[in-house]
Structure formats: C-alpha cells, structure tokens
Image (cartoon, rainbow, N blue to C red; front, side, top):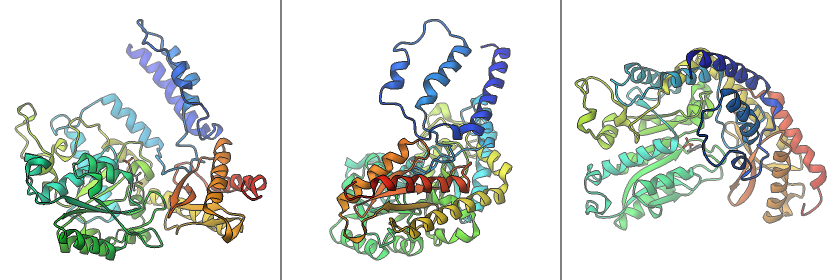
Length: 480
Ligand SMILES: *Cc1c(COP(=O)(O)O)cnc(C)c1O
C-alpha cells in the first residue's frame, strides 16, 4: 500500500470509527448470527492476487459487522465490560503505527519509561503502597499466573524453576487457597504453574459471597498437619459473579502469620479504588504481595491492558528473568527490561493508551464516570427490590446486580425458577435491545447486570429494566 492510499483509507476509516461510536446504539447488542455463518462467508483459501482496500472494507461491513457483539454498546450489561474511549482508540492507532516491540528498554526507551510512569500514576490513583511497582500484562489471567509462579518459587527457594516439580525439591504438595467464588483463571493458572487443580483449596464464603478468613486459617492449619505446604492465597476484590469483596486485612494477617504469598485479583473492582469513598475495598493492601486490576474492564482503555503490581519486583524478576546472550545490553543494570516482568518476551506498547486516557479524562473525569455507573447500578437494584415479581440475590457493593424474576414467591422450586429465568434471559437478549448474562449463586440461577460501558447513561439502564419487565407478562404463569 502506498502512502497516499493509506492516507485516503485512513481518513475514511477514522470517519467510520467516529460514526460507529456515535451510532453504536442502532445495532443489536448481541450478534444474531448462527454458528458457522461468518466462516462460510469467508473464502476457504487466501487470495493469490492482492485485492483493493475498497473490497476488503466493504466485506468488513458486509461479513464481519453482523458477527460482532457490540461490547461498547451503551446497553451492553453482560459479563464484565471491556470498555474503550476515544483517546484510547487514538493511542492504539499510534501504537499500531509505531509497531514496536517493548521487550527491552533499548527496543524503545519511551515505551518502558512511560510504562513505569503511568503504572505509578495508577498506583497513586488507587492508593496502593509506595513500594509497589507495576507492569502491564495482557490479562488478569496472565498476571495471576505470574503471581502463582512467584509464590511457588518463593516457597521452593527458587528451586522448582531449576529442577521442576518432579525434581524432589518439596516434601509435600504446594497448596493455593482461594474462595469458591474466585475466577476460573486461578485454577487454570494453578494447572499451568504445575500445582494441579486438586491443590487449589476452595475456602468457604459468607452470606455476602466473601471469603471467610477463619475458614482460611482452619484449612491452612489442617494442610500443615497433613504434611502439605501452604504456599499462596488468592483473594478476590470484586468476584465475577457478584463483585463480592474478600476482606484483605484479616486474610493478609493470616497470610503473613503462615508465610504465604498473598495475591489480589481485583480485575474489575480495582478501578473503583480511584474513588476516595471506595478505597475501603482495598483496606489491608499493605499486607499484599501482588495485585492485579484491568483498566481494560472499567477504565475506558481498550482491551488488552491489565495492571499488575508487586511489592517486591525482585521476587518477580528473579522468578521470570532468563537471559540469553542475544538479549543482553550494556544498560541492563541501569534500566528496566520488562521482558523480565512477565511471561511474554515481546510486548506491545500499551502504556500509550493509558497515558492518553488518564490525561484526557483527568482522574476527576474518570471518577465522575465511575460514580455514575455505581449510582445507576444502585438505582437498578432499587427497582428490582421494589417490584414484587423480582428479587435480589446478592449484595450490590459496586456496579453489578444479581437478581431473578420470581413471580411465585417463597414456594417456587429452584428448577422452575431456573427455567423461567433462562427464558427471560433468552428473550431479552434475542430482542437485541440489551445484553445481560447469568451466573449461579449457591446453586441458584441468577441474572446479572453490570453497568460499566463508556457511553452508558441512566436512560439505558432504565431501558434494561423496562425490557426485563416486558418479558413478565408472557411468563407470569407457573412453569413458564
Ligand atoms: C474478568 C476477570 C478475570 C479474567 O480477566 P482476564 O483479564 O480476561 O484474564 C479474572 N478475575 C476476575 C475477578 C475477573 O472479573
């Protein structure tokens, strides 16, 4: 592609992006295609001859767009958000244009040094301890994997890296403790890091779905008594089902008492700590060894951007650095080489979009948006509470509401309620007006609405409620 052609289509596509952001509401939120439909419309083999950009862009509109679920639709309330913003998109464009690999300081000093700076900005914004150092990872799953490997190495005196799990380094299995409400990535990471699923101990949760510290201590002691080796606790601040908040202070005190690594997964909820009135969710953070949250979830920064902080960067780099000759530079002693801070060698220039976002909104601008989301989620909760046909299934400390349709009251069976609510979910999502998802809480099927999109306004949340209310007329008789 010559430069002038690039310029022409570049302008055209920026116009398209601006229109998309303005008009995203006109699309159905959830894609309506059937499995295989998009694949069938893309030729099974690549073109021998180059095609025009016109043809490619036309097919983007015709083939690809119908298969898109619009995560940045203001009526997207499913899962947790992956929100974006104008400044973030522009920074991603620049990052793509530079096309750098930020693996070493030398491979782009600005990428490394900006990352150090903006991660420290985030540290200050969330009120994390002064000694915490940050690195951007692709996802929380990867950050938690890094934490588990650090914990493993700390427990084994850095010898499992050397000899492997089968090398006879440990006298017993290393154990990880997390709550039954923790994200599935904890167990997946435990498998990848060699602990094994059966060494992930699921600690009890209380009525608010938060980890019970007394049960944590009980399980640690029981394991020690049976010759197992307690290694790591993964606490969740803002569980994926219901944004339950594990209490960091008592958990941290127990982790300290028994010498366990404490990692905190705050993938969504960490963002809320930029609000002084929500800082309490991280009370006890000074007892934590590592912490992750995702600006790509609820801080208007394009996927992917996961902020991982460690108290002792040396524990991390000692665990993950490996230095072949071809990567050595004369400056290694003076500079940060982020390749030593994670799994991947090659790294994208992700700090740029954070920098653009934080500067463009300002911290106060970001706070305003989060406060709106929190307020509207509370309002939604109140609408649910006031309606005798609906009920709340978990506390709503942040922006996520777990609820169900239950016109039958106390006597209804869990199976009937599940069938009914699945039908409600199906119907509202098929309408294309909103997209919400479900979870299970203590075995009960729950609908779930999370307010966190960049362009969401109060009236969008109201529309979600209205869409849900409309399904009731057809479903109000027993057994759907
Ligand atoms: C979303 C989520 C994750 C996974 O995040 P990725 O960045 O997609 O790996 C992990 N933990 C919690 C609590 C989450 O909500």
